[in-house]
Image (tube, rainbow, N blue to C red):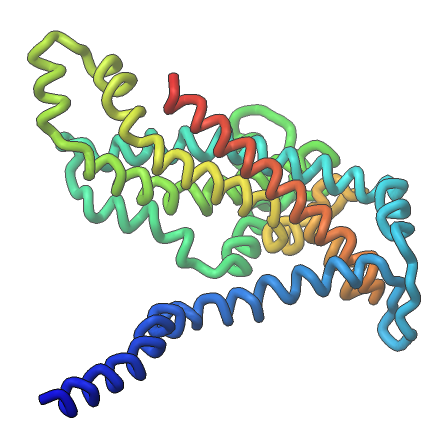
Amino acid sequence: MSTIDAAQSTLASARKPQGRYAPYFFISPFYILFAIFFLFPTLFALVLSLYKWGALDTPVFFGLRNYDHLFKDPVFWAALHNTMFYALTSLFIIVPLALLEALALNSKLLKFRVLWRVVYFAPIVTSTVAISLVFRMLYNRDFGTFNGLIMALGGAPINWLGDFAAAKVAVLVVVIWRWTGLLAVYFLAGLQSIPEELHEAASIDGANILERFYYITLPLLRPVLLFVSVIVLIGSMQIFDDPQILTAGGPSNASLSLVQYLYTQGITNLSFGFASAVGLFLFVVIFILSLIQFRVFRGFETD
């Protein structure tokens, strides 16, 4: 028996290190993919932002001069202003609209609820290019549907895609139409996870529908509200397709976004170092704004 026990103990000691590292082996694919597709590109962009590098030129160390040129470029400030407009208006318009839409879809009084959910979710699975091309026709100054309605009401036609102020609004309308349905689905999932007994008990205690919404629905929806707010902010800060297809950033950079500015510098002008500086700046801005959102919602939870 002693020989068998010794063999078993030797076998157990041989297997012990393998068992210790087994969990790391199973979770390693995530970290490998994270390092390849996020960590390495981020660090490479950070290094590249310190160099002046064209398509066929040899990289030359440039220090912080890319950032100096960036902050002195009026086109950059116009793109930043437009991007913040898209982000803030999306945050304070799309999120409330999506919540109201989810409340309507969750109502027991609504008929054909499944059909309505499919209708509101359809824009997010439709091609962005197709959506933008359709809206280009709707925005057309001469024969567009929007101007047709305005003229039918006695108003003057609007140059939606060529006017300095109207161009940003035109892009924003498309963004709202495209993303509200998806966010409503998130809110709908959160609403359906709230126990109905809470609303019934509050109703018996005399709480009206607004009080039940404020004291029951909103507090229990805070995790979903945080998630939706963060993805709306990140998505709107990275907006590219809609203004690129609708207006190409015009007129006179009135609807130009930061990602369009980055695309122009990196792909059109082949200034890879300068484009990397733009990308790093955008990354830092999104990171800071996301931290602020987490702090704000954490403050609400502690109140």
